[in-house]
Structures are given as structure tokens and as C-alpha cells.
Image 1 (spheres, rainbow, N blue to C red):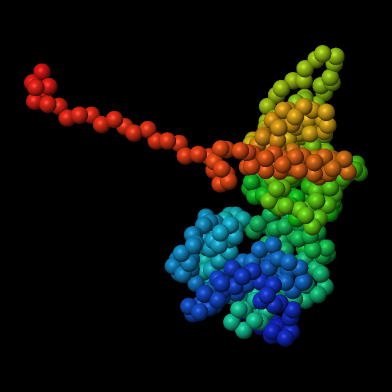
Image 2 (cartoon, one colour):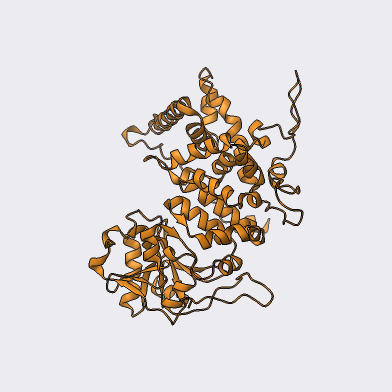
Length: 455
């Protein structure tokens, strides 16, 4: 009998039986949990945060599920607002930090004649909420009331065996939301887990279903993959499972032929991401897009050259076609090699024009960043560009040892320039402030005399 809400007892680990400590939980998340509990609501830390804490990893974020409805949560926290269309969530803000709070939900049924879950806004119990999640290792709850870990779906056992497994029938879950196939591969690569045999077989069988997903959602998942520090392994696994041919055929073909350029680029990106000095906020979409597309031989690698068959001739100028259109054509209309004519066309990823234009500019800047003999005025002008920081980071990631050295030099020079500008003599003594501008008094008009009025 398949386990489902109502026919299985949860496995509960008391405080001495697990390694989660409140000192490793974000202080703002604890504030949210305790305020909900103190007002009589059930409140659990859920999902990836619990999973990572049990693996002795540092969670990227901390999400909360509760019995309180969104409007009730909103009333408890003045620094919060309700978001979401597919399902309503509450974001509680603490400065730049956001704690996401969701009401317990139960699995929704697809609309008649459709297998996709398009609405997921039906409130439920904690048990029902666990069964509606994607993978067993993401359905663990930490109860702030008694510090126990609650497992309804076998996630603790899969953590012990390092296995990614869907909750329930894999084929049904992937048809409900095909993006789960992409997430399963990405999660296995990031945690260095294996994928359950039934789950893996369902991915291979249903891989074509991925084209039914929103291209914008898929692109967002790609950006998450490129930021997580295991991009190389993830793309290798996407190729092995046959998903990549529908997501980015050029990358799939490159990996089929060895993929040295692409894998090298992803390895350098992973190396920066996993270094102790990495600034994750600095990894903009433009840098991530370039790290993926440039090594594929997309015309961006030649910056202004947008026609693949064009060859530079003496004195000739490269054509200047629309860059966004060129990149948007990735995926094309040709059938991927090895697929039958009935295979669905691949997803066309909707790269933002602003990200592509910024990528073009930062690539154009690389030659100038490497010019050690450039005059000071040219260097100062380059350092003032809005894309300067992205350009220097690209040089650091993809420029080898020389690029790292030059990037450090450019950053040091910019810091000195800023410092000098801040310490310029302004004529205001030791205060460092400019002298106050003398305000010009407005001349008052005299009231008209009787004689003037008669005139």
C-alpha cells in the first residue's frame, strides 16, 4: 500500500536524537517561529533548511510553515507583505533579509483534462503539507515547540542513504510539475546524492514533458544551478538523463563531443562560488549567462560578430545584428540529434535583453582591462562605467592567474581613487565638508502707495 496522508505514522526524533541546534538557525527565523508559537499557532522550520542542518551544512535560507493563514501572519508582523499568485505566501522582512512563511497546504488536483498543477492554494494539515512536497528529503519539519524533527514521508532514511526520491509516484509528480525533474538532478548534484532508480527512470521516460513548463521558470532554475557551486556536475547529469537536449541543445551537443570549453567555464564558475571570498550577490545574471553561452561558440564570444559564417577580412567590419535575437534563437527550430521527428521542440530560454547587453559590454571591456599601458585618463573612465564591477569579476573568474592579478589591481586602484576623492581639500577646514553656499535673500516688493495705485 502506498503511503499517503492518514495511513502512516510519522517518525519523530526528539531533541537528543538529532544534531539540529537553535544556534545554527537564523535569528530572524527564530523570531518568526517563536512569535507564531506564542500566539497559539503551530510553526515549523521546513524544507531545505531542515535537510541541510541535519547534514551539518549551512542552509541558504530558512522557510517557515504554519497553521496561521496569510492574513493572520500579516497581522502579526508589521514588516511583512503577502506575495504569490500560484499560492499565497508571506514575506517577513528584516532589512535585506526575508523569511518566507507559508500556510500548511494539501495537494491540489489538476484541472480536468490536464496533468499540470496550476493552482496550489488549498490549506491543509502538517501531514498533508508534507505529502504535497517534491522530494522526501525536502519534507522534514523542525518543531520549535519541543525541538523535535518530524518525518511523514521517509526523508530521514533517504538522508542516511544519500538518495533523492520523489514523494509518491514519480511519473505522477513529474507530470504535475515537470520542473521537478530539473530540480531532482540539481539537488542530487549539489548534495552529491544518488537518484532513486524509479525516480531516475521516470526522468528518462518523461524528459520531453519539460517543454510544457514555463521557460521563465526554467531559466530561473538555470540561474540557481549556476550559482550553487556544482554547475559542472549538474550539467553533466542533465546530459546523462537526456534533459539537456530539450533545455539547451547546443550545450547537450557540446557535452556529447567532450564539452571541454563548457565544462572548463562551469568549473571556473564553481571554483569562484566555492572559494571563501566569493561574493554571491556579485554573480549577476549577465556573468552567469556568459559563463554558460560564451564557451558554446555563440556569437557573443566574438562580441560584435553575430553571423557564425563571418570571417574577418582585412579592413572589414563585423556585421551588427541584434544580439538579443541571436541569443534567443538558441534552441532553434531544428530537431535535436538522436530524437524522433515527433519529439517536442526544445525550450527557448527567455534571456533578458538588459542582461545580454550588459554581457556584451563586459566582454568588450576585457581587452581594455588587460591593457597595462593605457593612460590614466582611460583607466579612470573605464572604472566609472556601470558595468566595471561585472567586467572585473569576469576577468577574475575566467582570466586565469593573470586575470586574478589584474582584477585585484583594478579593484585596488578604484578604491584608491574613491579614497582620494573623499579626502580632497574642499576648503572647509578639518570637517571635510564643502562650505555652505550663501543663500541669496529675496528682495521684498514694497506695497503700492495710494498715488501709485491710482496711476
